[in-house]
Picture 1 (cartoon, rainbow, N blue to C red):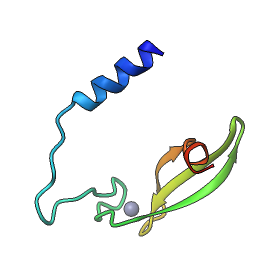
Picture 2 (picture 1 turned 180 degrees about the vertical axis):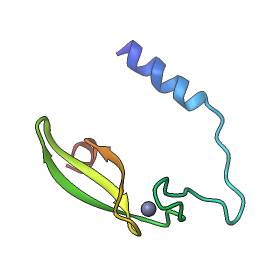
Picture 3 (picture 1 turned 90 degrees about the horizontal axis):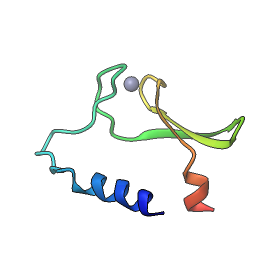
Picture 4 (picture 1 turned 90 degrees about the vertical axis):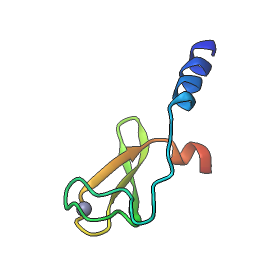
Length: 72
Ligand SMILES: [Zn+2]
């Protein structure tokens, strides 16, 4: 548990900045602004996971196993 808290603390210690107007995340595939994502639940060998993908080009931006954990 101590190790977990330490890594969490280190992560929070990183500097974060609020982007200026007009700056936001960009899809690495189609290079268009990410103004929202599609998400879909998929069955994985380890259980269910959530896949997030670009609304414009449908390429996968990330996978999370956590949504089920947090949202029940
Ligand atoms: Zn895209």
